Image (cartoon, rainbow, N blue to C red; front, side):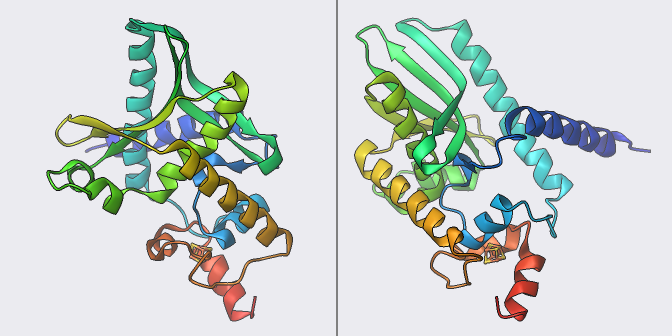
Length: 242
Ligand code: SF4
């Protein structure tokens, strides 16, 4: 007898539900910054609160939960050891009101010389990590995820407004298979401009109704449909000519 998968899955669902109620209920008018660069059509279903037709597997939730545990530990670790840092905000709620974007930045640090730095933490498997931080030059440019860059840049907009400056923004990766850690800087102005353009075009598109499948914005990346929580809904609508 092995009751543990079910025990763990129930606990993860409970934690996710507590988190969802605390963070997102009552804030439905906002897009989640973590959904940056997603398919416009998917964003439409989510924004308009369509029931999900395709569900995330228990195994996927377990993997995502490892990321949550890593985030929780990083939060505690920063508070535990903060030499040279004068102020710290972790899991900080950030809103870009004019774009209707909202989310939680992993860490905003102020150094002794008054500089402000923004960080987002990501877990990766060995393959994804090695693609980014292997020995070949240019790999970060080749393998970086647009969604991570635009998510961070969306927080960056809010941080810059809130603090009056932003001196750098970074994605920090943890290799779940080897324990290695590494990071790269995301060029502030370039990606803030890209993130702004994405959110503006998305809003303009979904204000007109359900975006059509065009393989450009809907979906933005081919693999998205495989993991989409509205894939069946999308197919039904497509068959109905929508
Ligand atoms: S199935 Fe694909 S195109 Fe349809 S909403 Fe989902 S991600 Fe977008």
